[in-house]
Length: 199
Image (tube, rainbow, N blue to C red; front, side, top):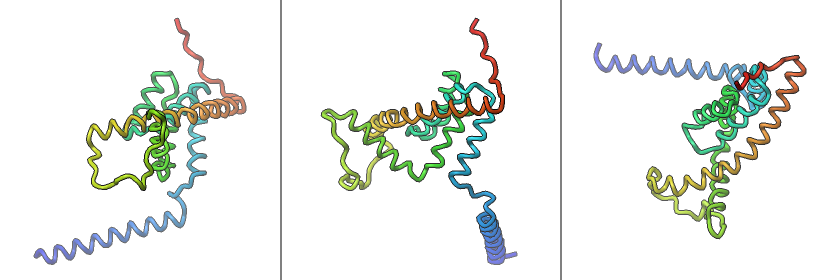
């Protein structure tokens, strides 16, 4: 077999493979087996949270920690941070991971949320307080983003703003989750595991 024949065969196989993938995607889109909307996602994750055998306080603490870290700009470290702080506070780790995935659902809106968090942090750190320049007035040409100076300049207000914006949402989610889980436990007659003695 010469090179020309081999390339033609490889091209034919590649086209067949791509066609089969396109057919599978169109079938799943038509049948809705893999596509999931926001309501289905929230329902599935709320059922997972209600199935956790732990105290309402521990589950709610895990949810609050997961949601808080979901709003931080710690790209790549959100889940690890949520796990660590859930373990540190005695909250439910699984609940923290499940709640931390909430940012996956709102991914299309995260640039807007991140800009809002940066604006709040910038306003808090500036003396006298003022808002940052509008994006349309900023020079967005070639910019060396991966420098430490840029990370420290943008990172501090962004991190502060994410903490200030995420904390009230996390506190509200704690109280809502605690009430919902406690009501579910009462309704189903579930008794949370006994707390170990502190001796």
